[in-house]
Length: 359
Ligand code: DAH
Image (cartoon, rainbow, N blue to C red; front, side, top):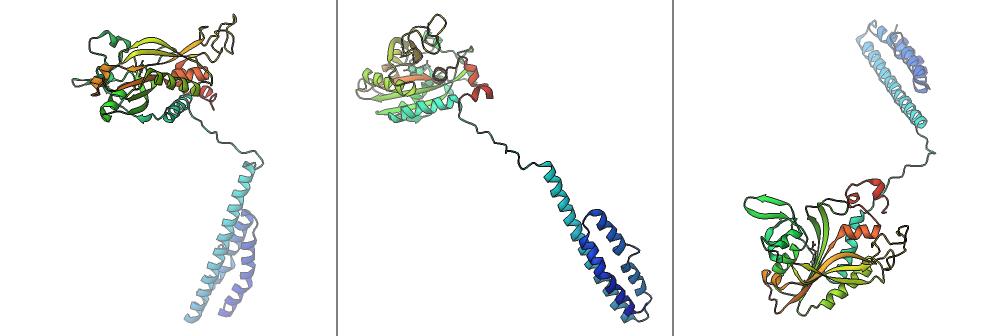
């Protein structure tokens, strides 16, 4: 073949090869075109073979370059179509697997735990009354947990709250049994009245039954100033009870004992299930007795009292010049009452069937 013949061979077949490679509508057709035009028996190979037989070096160069250019162009066309067909196959496959007419999958939204909700509500009420949030450690010195609160060593008052003792190399350290140690810390830190703090946190006891857990949560309130009276305590408790439970609930104070308050009271509220009558309501037994208050008409919700002078002394305040009140609320107990939960352990198990009931 002469150079002219090679050129005409390339020209003649190039357009046809290009159209076949670009236009193949499926992988089989594309492969057939590749074999036909780019394969060993294709026109390109034939042309390349003829290049070697050309007499002039110049012609060889020209023809060789022409062959290579055409080859590269057609390889590109082939590769582009190969990619396009693979993409189309993938899209078709996905379309078969996905039904875009199906409704979407909703992602489920979580919500606050009933204990958190209860705690937030209580702290919001206290904050509205001017109680500033305070904090203390859960692993606490015996001094703050007991001693400063007028619970001396070897005194029977210690029996009210047994707890877990921490081996701290000789130091007397316990898992705090209540949030009351924060009272002592707050008074010592402030140094002088007025002082109005609230504290939320975990506390620990050697308890474990359907209504008591070895770990639970309390909220403490402390108000110290000149001339704070028992009437202030009562007014605060009344407002608190109405905000947290229901408007119109009545507060009843029963004489009690806590080493850190004098006088001390147990705070009851009129039963919101039976309206304080002890009978009827939505949780009444078959004989009509209210199960929530055990037919007494009242439910105990917290301990409270006027800060004991001994506590002021231990906290470097002068009991002749300051007075104060304090109270301690079990958060689990309030949550159980509000939501009608009978077993405290449900609050810690994170069973979704249970939690989903408190959106
Ligand atoms: N700390 C007490 C307890 O855990 C509750 C309590 C009672 C706290 C009376 C007080 C209080 O601040 O004045 O049982």
